Image 1 (cartoon, rainbow, N blue to C red):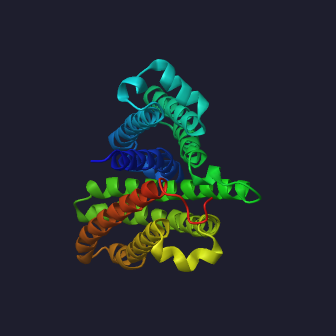
Image 2: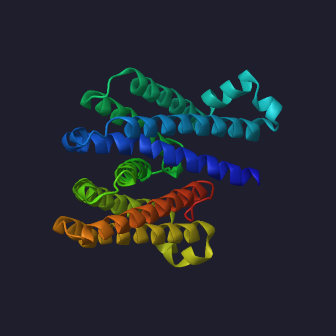
Image 3: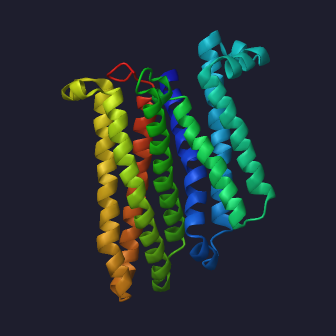
Amino acid sequence: MTLASVEVLIRLAQFGFGLVLFGLPAFAVYRRRAWNAAGRTGAFFKVTLIASALGLLIGASAATLALTVNMYGTLADALDVEALWSVLTGLQVGVALGARLVLTAAFLFVLLIMPDRTTTRLALTLVGGVIVAGFAWSGHGAATEGVWALTHLISDVLHLLAAAIWIGALVALTGALARASAPEDADMARDDLQAFSTLGTLAVLVIIVTGLINSAILVGVDRIGQMTSDPYGQILIAKVALFGAMLGLAAANRFVLVPRLERQDIASVSALSSLKIIVGVETALGVLVLLAVAVMGRIAPMSGG
């Protein structure tokens, strides 16, 4: 495995774990009454967030080490405290990584020390949102110069936050479905899916609008026809296609499976089974979208922004 491949996987891990740290607490706050009534604030919520926080700490640490190796040439040099400190304080991407490590540690502290209440989930959502927004600080959005610089950065932040809300809701739904095995679980699955659809619709609108803005800046309207022959454009096309497939599955859930679950007849059992399969596929597509984002972060945009 090449160093470039390792760096892509590190970026993928950071994106995946980081988005969960905002999206899952946000969904728990959005669904606080039903979430509490269903008794879902215990093991799943806490274990998922602990695992995600630890995963992000490991990913950010690995990214810092890889960045230091790139700067100083060897692993031995990269392990030097002064070298690591110079990267964390002297480079914008290094400062972003350092802030990510500190914020993730703070997130983990709040999660482990404070009792599981709405105020705690609000605090976790706030810290998680800052962590997610920080990804834009070390990405293409922060590298844009000129009149569109601020617009691109804000658009990138909103794009990431909206994506995190969708991913977090999807994780919550996956957790609920993993424990759903009987017809009486259909109510919980239906309600979660309806909440996911409402919140997801808003998130999708933000993702589409900000995605168009980001693409216009990074690709350039005059270069749209060249996308199929450019590496960045090709991956962007693949990302959009995967996103479209996720939208299709989300629509099937909302307009086909939810009505079947609402009927509460024998078909609801098969609907619940189908829902598990579709959500599993949608989650896998989400991972592929994040992989595309991780790869795109290492490629120069078509417009050279």
